[in-house]
Length: 144
Image 1 (cartoon, one colour):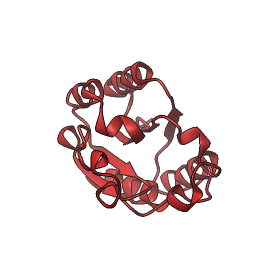
Image 2 (cartoon, rainbow, N blue to C red; image 1 turned 135 degrees about the horizontal axis):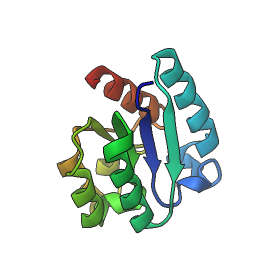
Image 3 (cartoon, rainbow, N blue to C red; image 1 turned 90 degrees about the vertical axis):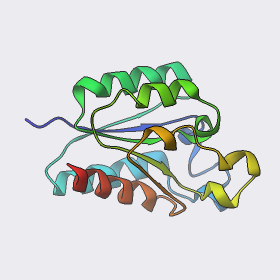
């Protein structure tokens, strides 16, 4: 059986659907997970979908993906702009990796314009709401 695609989610994404829907949309994280499962299944892949508010747990998940995943999609949320630890963990991957964001960080506060993650992944997709996950998943599958 093929290795799954890991989809990792950072802090506060467990609040999707209720937290600033004007920025992040009305879909819940569970809605996004269901859509990703459907897309991956149609392409012949399984997914592992996880969320944590804790930076070290996300590092552990990335390290797990090194051995267990065929590709990785990550929405690091606020850790995008602060986490050298995520950057360093992502640089250890030998699999396709895609950074995604629901909003377009370049159109928001100036501190959101720097991504430590972007420097360590294959590519970045942002600004398409929940569809960013679908686009990221499609990109990862194309890279496989």
